[in-house]
Image (cartoon, rainbow over all chains, first blue to last red; front, side):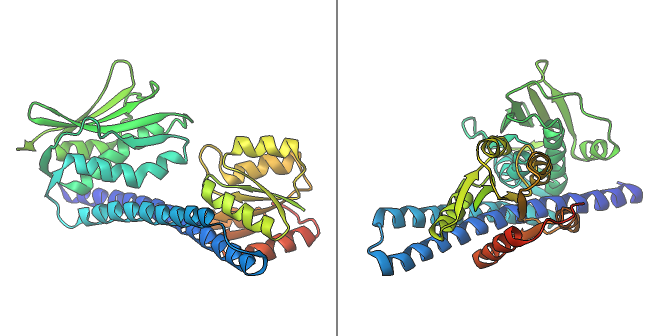
Length: 219
Length: 123
């Protein structure tokens, strides 16, 4: 990579990091807001019970369970965000592609949701694939593919992400419930990323699948 | 006083609605913009509390639709975002703009003030 390309990578990478961070902090704030209201409601009910009689234990159990669930969901997001944050630690690292897909889906689910798109990780076809790559650049390519699919604002669209092996290559498959996978736009930066990571993008003939093919799997 | 709460987080709006009801304030909730528009057609709401970021149509876009059809309706915005652009967009509506997680006392105060304020000039 020459100096100009590094500069571009730095600027675009920083913007990408900021976008993901803002999205994740927004999601955590939402969980905190729910916990705040559920805690407040428990408090209201206990104040009322002091005047009007006993609290319904089933109701209390349900509200407490909802709070625990919200904490677990936020923890899930924070763990995935921590994985993402550490991806800038090294320019090359061993990446478990399956773990990568899971974490990326968690931290980008909200980005898709605000466009009315349901994003899910597909664990049914789980395959352990590992590779040595630049994880932060790969995350940007994942984001580039996702943004492309959700950019049409197709409300009700469902996208599932899974990994697969093809000979010595790894694949990240974005399967869509509708044919939204148009040809990728010409973009200097994504071309640079694909060149650096030895990846290419293919669209299935029915336009329901976008496939990011990554060369150089390590076994 | 009848309030419509709109946020895609069901547990958030249902808890808020129940807390308002416990204080004698009639509050319904919707988790989608479509549901909110339908409910506004069926009942006359004095005030709507709208989440800014929602799937499909944002709270600001929903506000534009509601204020066009229901000019008397007052609004309060909720958001988890604190970016300058979002904050300005919220302030430009001329309505109260609260950051999540909200203090319930502050929400109550905003509701009371919004409903007692004279109509504001909206940008």
